[in-house]
Image 1 (cartoon, one colour):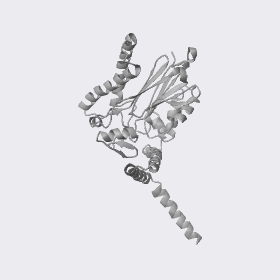
Image 2 (tube, helix red, strand yellow):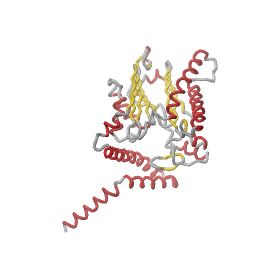
Image 3 (cartoon, helix red, strand yellow):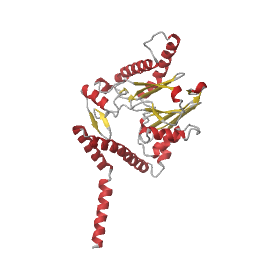
Image 4 (cartoon, one colour):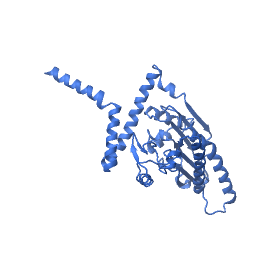
Length: 340
């Protein structure tokens, strides 16, 4: 009798291990819940789906790591992946970036990202310099200038990439510092967060995701749809609802380039540092976790940027990961500025 019981328990254990805990089974479960949520709009299921999406990403990361280990014949996956890095350090700014478990480095070496890097900073600098010299047009502000230049770069890039049938797209996150203000423009799901004088996390941007009510309604009005495939995607393709590039979806008007602009009072916040990062970081860290983690490592050579990138990888992030940390210095009168 005891032997039969042990055999039954062993069989149940094998079923759990080889069927219920397989990534494919988790994917099917998430898709089923997503369809239920999409058609019946039950709040309880939506909460489950969002939690399941994060769990699926972690499972995919572990599966990718095992597969990579097999391909490398036992070599350390870290040795292979961390050889594909990019880093930068200058005064109060540090950047660290890894390709991670992706086949390509889309955060940096990709047509849309390269185009924006080559054209947006210079054109933005020229318009800001002209604005500072004149400051006569009351309709202009730092926010309006950021918006104009981002939309212009997107139009120019669409013309070039569509002519080559290049469907590349990119996010855009720009933080503009003046004497007493910080102006942030965001398109897509890269994200900024600031640590104020009390160590609190202050969101500098909000992700543009298809499942958000405002974005979902806009997509539906344009004749588009969203569907769940590991994450909510526009037309079943793009996991964010706004971007630069992505010309096939722009032609359908279901993805737009319009940035959100937010302005912050530096005298009030007196920030210690800010983090600007691609979505790979935010797959593994919340805003509050990221601020706590970096704050404890501001004395490191990369102000914690390198450490948080590597920690995101260790946590199973399957994506490219790029993090910039800007360390503020206290200025006269209690205000803060990003170095000299």
